[in-house]
Image 1: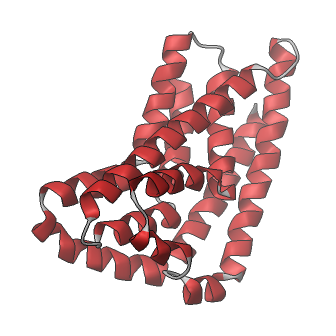
Image 2: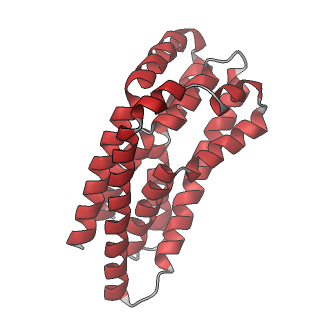
Length: 219
C-alpha cells in the first residue's frame, strides 16, 4: 500500500490544484446564498471524484492478462496517459491568453441562478474534464496494479478523494462556519487564480505527466 500511496499522492495533489473546481467553488462561496450551493457543489465534487476513482480501479482490475502481462499492459497505458498529460499541459500553456480572457464568464456565472441540485450536478460533471479523467484513470490503475484486498482498495480510493477535493472541501466548510473572516481570503484567492492558475496548472500537468511516464517505463 505504501508504494501505491507514493504514486497516488502526487496525482491527488495535481487534482486538488486544478483551477476549474477551485474557481467554481470560490464563485459559489462569494454568492449571497452560499451555504446550500456550496454544500451541493462540495457533495457533487466529493461523490464524483470517489465514484470516478472507484470505477477506474475496477476497470484496471478488469484488464486482461496474467499478473505479469497485466502489469506490462498497465505500464504501457501509464506511458500513453502520461504523454497525454504532457500534451494537455503544453496545449493549455499555448492557449493561456484566450483562457484568461474568458475566465469567470459563461457557465460559471450562470451558477448564480442555479439551485442546489444543478450545482451538485456541476460538481459531478467537472470530474469528466480531460485533466480529471487522465488523473483519475492513472490513480485507478495504480490502485489496481497491486491486487490489494478490497478494503485496502477502498482506503486508497478514499485517500485520493480526500486529497483531490480538499481545495473545495476546506474553503467551503470554513466559509460556512466563518463567512466574514473568509470573504477577503476568497477575494484574494479569486484574484490570484485569475492571474496565475492557468500557467501553474499547466506546469503541474506537465510535471505529473513526466512522473507518470517514468512510472510506466519503470514498471
